[in-house]
Length: 341
Ligand code: SF4
Ligand code: SF4
Image 1 (cartoon, rainbow, N blue to C red):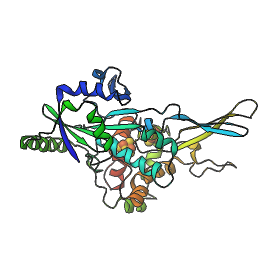
Image 2: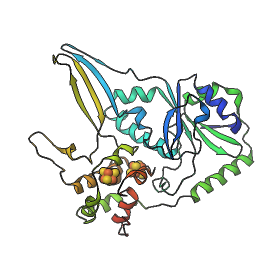
Image 3: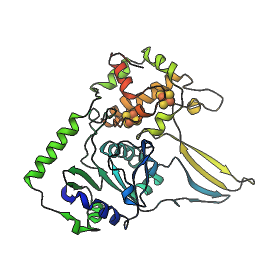
Image 4: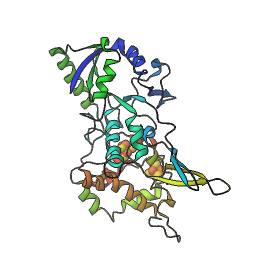
């Protein structure tokens, strides 16, 4: 992977150049939080943003979208909203979140709706210094070696810009004069010092060694009922988690029933209706069962299948859950430590 340097002062000029590839999106402030928004004015970008309220999954699996339109004898898939786009400012944990979605939506059963959006989108990462809710070091998602086209890393008065793909190379060429190949020994020292600073800022940590076994042995733990008594089954944890990907589909027909659209929308296994089947049986009526399923996916099933957890340590569940149930607390409980709920 090749690295170049870009002067910090040239960042906005370069962001402007990226618009010739497609729509430019990045994190912007919304009250005290951050959201991904279109950067009509590149100076609106919040370079110090940490986690956005909703992760970048919304660009690849929109919360609600039309899959296809149908009539009696025809159907046509809909990709009306797919256009070339640059997502700037993705942090390493969110890039890892995307890599997890790639495994699910591009590998065994490729999803054309995801693929079209993924293919049309350039990923430009940005390094970050964690806050007290980040757990990415524990999930080994605090750095990236792939999954991006370009990745910007702080380097004093410069950015170290990693080129991660041939598209990344093309993006650099949109304004090649801004970049320098002169990486000095001093730059390496600055880079390593920055990494040490980043690593020293993680306040929350946990040990995932043997977590599938621990989950298995904890199947009947009273902890699940204790958490379930507090859980509101609101589903917010699923909405904000960069790796949650459950969805539902529904047909919306016109009055003649001869034509309509099939829509797809986010769902959550925390919703009571999620496991309700025809005939009225609900496989996970109890809230404790739904909580257990959510955390089994993150901490057991995905590790068993893919060798890594499907938690990337972004901290959004900590920020979002109204009753403070989150992955850090659950792991504390599972590993025999006192839960502070
Ligand atoms: S764990 Fe928290 S965010 Fe998730 S459904 Fe329960 S109350 Fe809502
Ligand atoms: S479980 Fe929580 S910390 Fe882990 S990826 Fe999901 S929202 Fe982020």
